[in-house]
Image (spheres, rainbow, N blue to C red):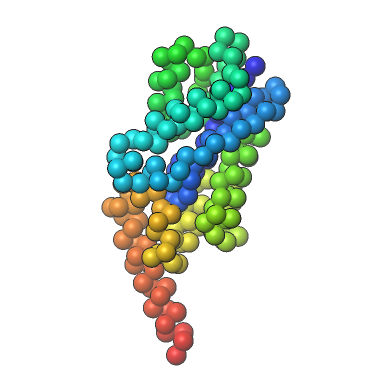
Length: 185
């Protein structure tokens, strides 16, 4: 039997991260969450998300009654799983790095988009399950539109947020705010 493990949201600017587990042969599916707070301040500096990912993977595999001797794991290549790989090697768990597509990827990406829409309030019609630059800018623009209230949703531990994107977000917010003022008169 094969268990796939995939993540969604680790590279996105805002929101929680989701880790999913799929036993391919039975369709059994579990999705777990890594809190946004892990990707901020001291938690990020201390690499807490990477260690929490190990805990989440242990929990997920336990809930699926993973059988070390008879099952293999196909693990997403993302760096959030770096410590998971070390754990698998220590424990002698049979795994392969893999590109995860299909049902599991659709599920975790869908869970992320649902979280962004329902929990954070991202309303853009351009927000899709496809990760990458387009989704980054949808989320960046969402933060900019109401920067003082939305910055708390940013994964502020990311170096580029602090060296490039935060200043750009503030600048864009000021332009938006000023254009709204000018429209009122």
